[in-house]
Image (cartoon, rainbow, N blue to C red; front, side, top):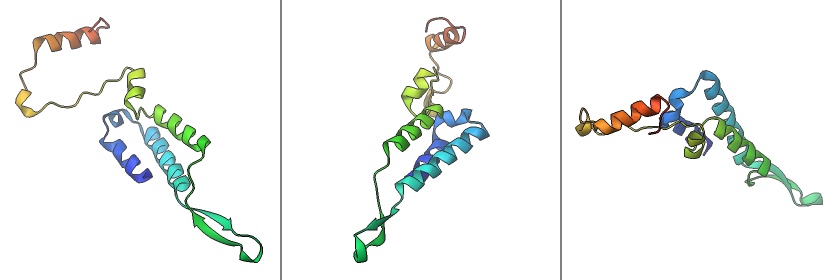
Length: 117
């Protein structure tokens, strides 16, 4: 799960803004997630019947909160990007190339100048 999350960052638009330190943060976060989500050694039974088993435990609330906070810093969710006023625009299909609506272009210019869109 952690690997899938980390790899999805490269395909996400906000990663175009990542610096090496952002990737290092993402790697550290994925490593933490991987360790916590992996089975943990736990003593099972009592007395002479006690033995160690690898048990899958749910993540701790504090870990989940820390992961979500780090993900916010990496602009992982749409809400995070909106709070930072970062709008990702997907490329349009080749059919619409060169056929941009003039009103869309003018609205983009106004936004860049700080005016209302």
